[in-house]
Image (tube, rainbow, N blue to C red; front, side):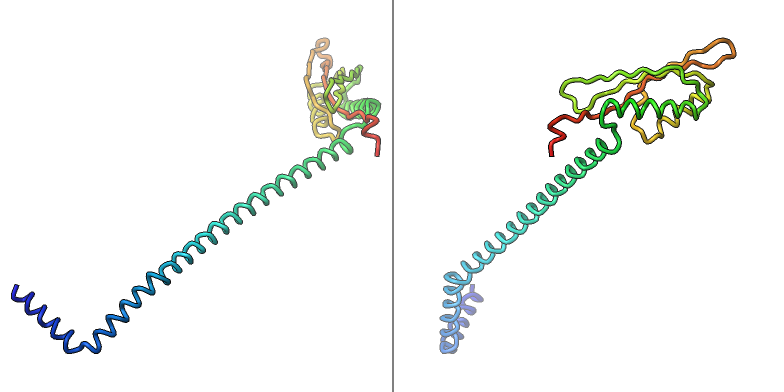
Length: 200
């Protein structure tokens, strides 16, 4: 307790002896505190709020750019798919029933001949289901020959540029030592040109 009194007395004596210096310093400190509370602190809060708003705006801008890029990519993908589909309709598929029959009949007979198979018969049946863009042309083709020739024919058919789908293959053994009989069930498709399609 004596130390506290001594320290208090020493402090009072220092303040009393240096009153000319201490008093202006105390006033300056008080003014600084008032200025900080009245002006600096609110201004720093305002700056912090502006920075936060800027960060939020930047994040929203980045999100908007990502969304825009994604939407643009989706539209580009749809446009590309539509263009490829139009090319498929125009360049790959036959344009009508006559074209589909001509294309498949001639080409299938040619592939059979190249594979050393005997062409027996072929039938064609269009299957036009309502609300479908494409018409299916079912083909049943009967051939005869050796097993290796049948394999070669099927390979050529699957790698040909014409759009023909192999639906089913039926193999039957001929007479003893004779050639195999083969019945192929195939499909191709064509898009009928309507009056609306033909209009410019």
